[in-house]
Image (cartoon, rainbow, N blue to C red):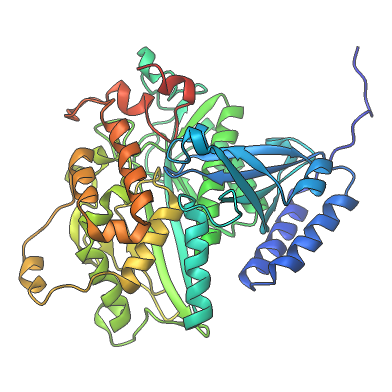
Length: 479
């Protein structure tokens, strides 16, 4: 027997959702005091009777997104004492020190489209803490947040990011989880770049995901099918670095959710199918102070300032040290293939898309650098933190580097070489801290050792089955 009218959970129209999420986003960008935002949000939750639960999310060391639903009434009473078992998260705490705390970042608060995520829920990002309440070293979101806040308070500068995240839409739900059973990925469309008929499945997916993205305050710009069959990209405007990294995680989450409702899979494997272009996460970066874009110079080479070029040179200098951070999976090294516009050359260029760093056409407002060698399965907080800190504070190029740049240098073409370079890098250890440096290398090596050493021309089941971003704990244990 069906009963109606028993539940009255929060459902907000999309246009109003967009207004509410943009208002919340602006409070973050204006750096409103955290305690005032917390007070405002907790009062809202107490007053809004139609909310049943708050989804609190965090990201592990590898970049995997985790979510816990807290009953609203419980959360209002216990928000300052939330804990979880960190030993069940790869790369986090050991079994003998398993309990970790979870603090809520009330400024990172989102209202969700009820038809996609279910009615009566809101979402907030969490910060992982040690037992004593101090920041947890392996929580890269907290590390990025503290770093960018320090830059703003000490130097008055703001770091901006816009990510261009590519993905594939495949037939069937959980296609990645079934790949090791011998089920190949099936394209949903072969329309090609910018082409998909209105109403077909790929276009339905892009349209729906873009609507959700807009409602969540991303600030949409454009969306379209990409070069490869069944490939998509939905672009949105630049924003402050931590907000941008949060949006990377939400982008992948909403895409997967929308795809599942269409009986499909949204995949962010860097190279799920050989013979076609892979997925990238081109990361556009700029820095402002007092409203001025510090990367712009009207008469500068390619429109960039001296600071902009120094930022690039430091990244190129440390390219091999950073490679495992930017390309963090076995599969990501298939993408660094020069036959498909692969950004594997350690150089910067305004026109060559094979360069690790590109300088797009820009003006006083839009001048930026574009780091093209980042895969969409990278931990966005770790990658963005590593790039900004390296660009601003990393090792300066040696006096002899001009002659080295005359020769074309390339990024590693397999994860084992990238791990070796990362483990031997003093700079990477300084960047992440000794403990996190060791943990990250260990979890990457564990995945690498579960896959064939040679990539070959066929995607192997191990590089999908044991991929950090798509597998589950059950599959990881099937080795």
